[in-house]
Image 1 (spheres, rainbow, N blue to C red):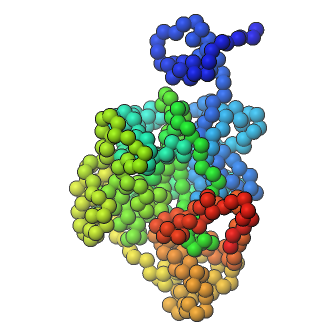
Image 2: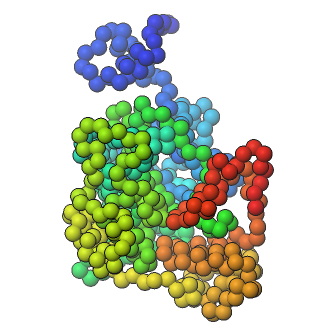
Image 3: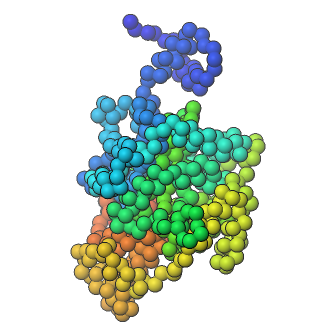
Amino acid sequence: MLLHFRISVCELVRLKEKRRQTTFTPQQKLTAAFLSLLPQMLPATFVVNNDGREACFCPLPEDADGLYVLFFNQGASHGSKKIRTDAAQLGETVMLPVLFSPENMSDAVLKTQMLRHMQAHNAVVVAVDCSKEVRNGLCRAWQKDLDSLGGKVPSGSPNSKSAGIIRSNGLPFGTFAAKTRAHAELRRCWRLLAVALGRDDPFAAPARGASQPAVISSFDGILYTKATDNFTGLKPHTDTYPPPHGETGQLQALAYVHPPPQGVLRLGCAVAFYPAKAHSLWRDYLLALVTRWSTSPDLDLRQSPLPGLGSKKGRGKHRFVLGGPYLPKKDATKLSDVELQAQALKLPPTLRCLAKDACQHKTTKCEPEEYFKQWRSSAHCAKGANKERWQLLQSVGKAKANRNDFSANLFRSAKDCLKRAHRFGAPEKVNAWLSIGGRKRRLTKTILQPSGVVTKAQKKVGHLHSFDGKKKSRR
């Protein structure tokens, strides 16, 4: 039997938003049932594999409750968009496979499986915890953070409804983000994948007297999209470092809570972990804690905690910043290491424990010559295919590198690569830099987004507006 509805689109939306009410008319009940059968549009992250094929991920309605994590490297082309919940069944969208029950796998088996997925898809999805209790606890933590801000997230910069990324008011330092980053199975999966990819173990054994391993984490954006938001996503792009053909990206994890709270299409958190070895990373980590500026995976201070352009004063605690008192960035950057550490240890308990663990670990400054020697004697060493770059690294290791023998860009790129490998505990970056080699032509569809602390000129490289239809390639 066919059902005929004489009801406007506005009425459908209004009824969908009022599904919590206790009494419905017969027509409203029938309409609500009809709405539940319609496919939904969900924000999804996609990653392009080495064959140029795009695969998406977001938890679907039929998936078990819990915490799902997408691991990928920013060096792969990726982005975000909306997909229909039935798109996978209709064959319109390729979905990334999911590894379930990692707690039942040994470290060796889980590491092998994650590495296989990573090599095949440039990404791996793990259902790190299929538990309603974990899901409900994370949702309560998010609601607690929202209540601290008066019940809703301010609109406008540095928040983006179109991209579905929230960075204001110290939310990356809030209860929800902290509970997500502290999840034991998420950390286990990160450690196994990082080591399998040739990175240093970020969760080294804790120092004597420390209760937790000395680990540095990013304070990246919250993935938050309401049903009423105009989510458009991010175009395919690759995160890279200057000079334009430098080594790319960081290992990144996007942790999704499923199902999200009522009226929310996506709730999650971007996560990255690094060993507390490099002094520069340690300092940036403490700067983020005391200033409450959100960071990228590179731990550069990316966005102020105070809502800016486009935000309204609103009701309640619009300019409230989670995590207690904070310092202005301009004042914090002037502090010495000792003064910065003292300020960090004055923070409220939830943030002070993070600073305390990091402060108990000895850090070092990067010396490219010494780091090259360490890398060459380690199991991570792989000479690569580019002879010129290998000769340059050898010259750097012997402190005999001469700018007259190599191009200025290549010389700077080698030094930058060694520093980043030390900073992020990622010796595999040296292997990636060696394997690149030579000049490459970039197609119009490949958008390079410079990462980390870069100049204004370097930020323009690969910007969306610099690629129009008339330009087939750039050198």
